[in-house]
Length: 187
Figure 1 (tube, rainbow, N blue to C red):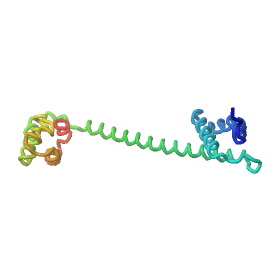
Figure 2 (tube, rainbow, N blue to C red):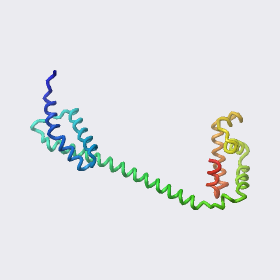
Figure 3 (tube, rainbow, N blue to C red):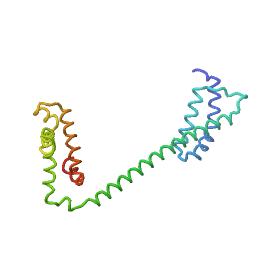
Figure 4 (cartoon, rainbow, N blue to C red):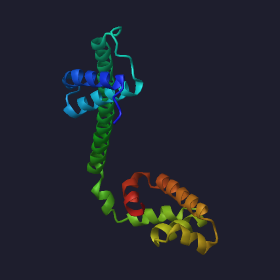
């Protein structure tokens, strides 16, 4: 069995003397015991890897306290930033939900039951350029996949995709007062 190095003995003494105090101190600030333990563990891991001299020239209490304080500050900064980001995302999500809710409430039920709605939509589709209309109808009305349409018409899938995008853009313009209905029917 190999004898312990001088550093190993010093390290064990420091660990035994400081671990509990460091963990209690850290927990006062970071709140959760597990987080405090992780911080202290990280400090001791770094101390083991860096192997600083634990001699009489160093104020060990001050040295360890500064490291511990800085690790707790870093942890709290990171957690504060994370929570701000989470809160911002939640606020944005709630705002989006509110807008969607208001949009649905404002949606005119009469619009959906208008007997001329089919004619209005058909006229908008008929107003598309011929090839664009053909591809749109095959995709959205007949339910064919883009790859199948490309094979049947002897064109690339990219052409099919771009024609469908053009159709959406033109229909969006032509049916701007009926956008929710268009989304329901074609998307």
